[in-house]
Image (tube, rainbow, N blue to C red; front, side):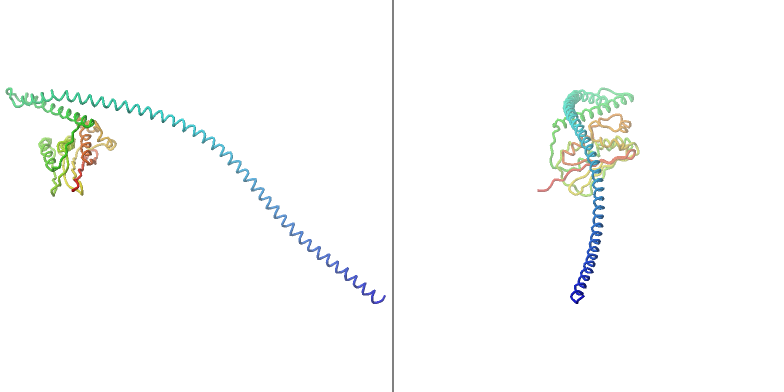
Length: 339
């Protein structure tokens, strides 16, 4: 073999070996790539399976939510229907209440008119009875023995109570009809309270109730008031305090100035009022149960009138009370602003 043939042979072997090596390397690379692709495929499949499971669960949740929404929608439709029916019922009830209120207003007006007429009709004969009994007590028609004087005296006191009742009824009627006739002017309030105290001083002493008046420590400014009407309000409060305070108790009137108002307290150690009845205290004709047991007479108009009179003057009235311990009624009157 010559040199050229040997070179060709060697070159062939080299090419053969190189091709084999290249084949091995290629096979190795293909294997590794296939393995990577297989692993990626496996991961992708696993992820797809996971997504499929999640999608399946989401689907079940959506189906459940859809059912719930369908049921909720049905319930809402039913509730809407119920509300519509309730609305119709409320409209009917409102109409019925409106008609009932109109009837009540008409009846109240008729009642007030009847009370006014009846009170006016009673006033004249009662005045005649009062002065007749007064004349008997003064013995203008002849001497009376002790028993006769007692009977005449009792009749005279009963007549005075009836006259007070008639006056209260007339005042309430005029107040409701706007005919109470307030006539205000600037004047001192202290003499009003002082004269009220003096008016009840004797009856308090006869009953055995300690009655006192705490006057203000400094002069009070003049107030714009209707003296007659304010006197009615104050007398009603004092009369209640003395009426419902048993012998041995105390009633105190206190008058003082605070900031831009004058304040008057009427405090007693009487029967007080049950807590569950205090909301009705200024209602017309209302009397607490313990008050009815303590005093059978009474109209339940005193505090109703007092409240309306004081509020007409721009003031306010309020109270504190405790059953079997007493009550304090307080009212305020505004001090006029100086111009």
